[in-house]
Length: 275
Image (tube, rainbow, N blue to C red):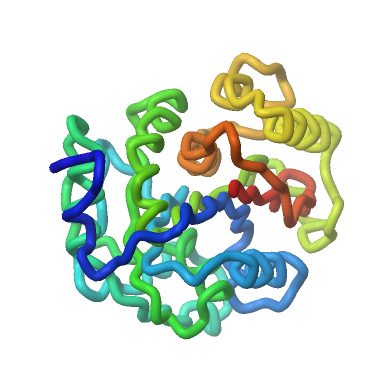
């Protein structure tokens, strides 16, 4: 494959201006069916960028040994949660896949071996946010899994290989939460916007400053940044999608935050737009 011109990438996709990149704090699965300021933020983000030819989503909820890409024609809607109202399980997001784009994405990431997956589909880290952005489900969506055996720097560097997709109208979305500690949720304030434990407030302030200052190395090396970050990121699954967004930033591009709130004591909905 000629990585200089991407002539083989999705022949139906015309060359475009470079698409923005997003990291979306997806929060509770209930955001899929609720109307609140966060889903309004997702819709606003979509309204401010060109309609994509396709979407590549890196979700916290597809956490695998090795890296895989969904390669089916019609990915299923996965309800990978429990204890929620039936209305949430009834949601379907019937966006098509794009096997050709999946294959080309795998080639872009060489020499890393990327498996083509025909079983996964779209988990709620993907569909619960994308359904607000593109409710007609008329844009193809593929997912790239997160290899849990690899450190943050690996994912940051791997993302750079995806950059040429942006010039084919592909919207790349990381979906997770920067502050995400389910064991320490303040259930009395689970729906209180702005509610955060002291350590969560500190972690949000630190990471926001690093994001806005372009100090991505501190974000990559979060485990070296003190107790607040250790509480904020007890496991890396929801944090690593951010690496794929930041790894795609060009030095000339702006970075902006939106949905930048704590909720439930130990969750941040902070979302990032690059470009």
